[in-house]
Image 1 (tube, rainbow, N blue to C red):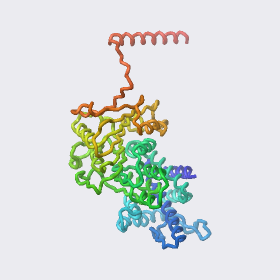
Image 2: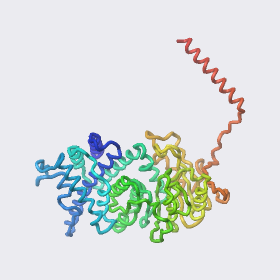
Image 3: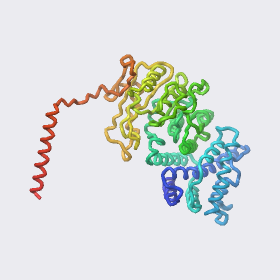
Image 4: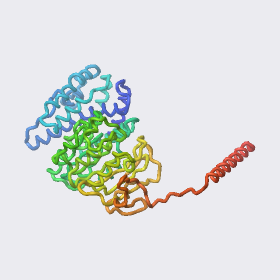
Length: 484
């Protein structure tokens, strides 16, 4: 049912002049889905309060609750079509009353970590793009068919929302910006192995894939007490995102997955001078895929000891500083970081090896990030002691990857299993730090188990073979013409 409703919503949105891309579909369906979720959430909390004989205080005033403005029902449960807003009236209410009311929560909320504040943040940062109030009515009618009450319903919704984010992430220019393949995220988390009580951070949160999957992983790792679950939902996951749409999608993704009050801030992580990071700001676990290829301005670079315009390198410095002693990190970065000969790359590799134990490097094949066109590696390290040896694993999936055959969890099973013991296989090997060049700190991926075939032919022999192949091709074409 959920899947069909999602499809119907996108079909409706395509007809509206205000929506033209997957990004628009994701953004506009998200705020409507969120308000329906919030209504079901409030009803559930109210029911629990009644059963426990406690006072219930709704977040939203009555006129702004879904069950008041979106779908009016009679006492018998049937829709009251005589008192339902549609067309210009509906659009006017949403634009001029609903959005201003919801955005005001940002100033009224008691805490920036409360759900009220997040509601204010979301509706301050976006607007209703639907130009036709009748189209808006059609979308609302579809969303009203959904219920987010049972755990099964919430799980199905969160899974379909992930699929919508994936489609948004693969929509052209935003491919590398929003979506990290979930099989890769899950495998990174398995290797890092976060626990209940850890503070987990992503400074380039995007759609919050790392934080959502870490929440799922920890939730299933053991039977949680009520206090552990509350801590997991409220004081475990932290992050920052500078782009508005990604920030909104990330917050809603976390909420829909069960993290009811996400500790995500809307800011550029790199604007913080890392010298100002104190012990109280540090975290136990960092999981991230920071944007690569970007070029930061000089004033941003001044916040870092190693000056560079490469965004990912600034994030890596931030992550090293942000970790507690003994803290663990799994971060995706371009594979050129391992071998670039510029001063910043060399200095950053030196810092990483001297301040952290870079124990594992996962070399990913081309095509892992659909549409990105770059090769990447994953660095796994712990802060507090220098690197002695690095275990490399070169992932070989045995096929060309793309939209129709993307990375899957099975592809990564051997890596996850062998990473525990750092077993040596055809795909893995150890590098002793004592053996590397201390002038360049080059960490290039060079699998010693795979010997490349060397072509020992002379140029003259190669040319002669090409000429022979041309002759054979000419003769074959001639024979075909004679037969015709």
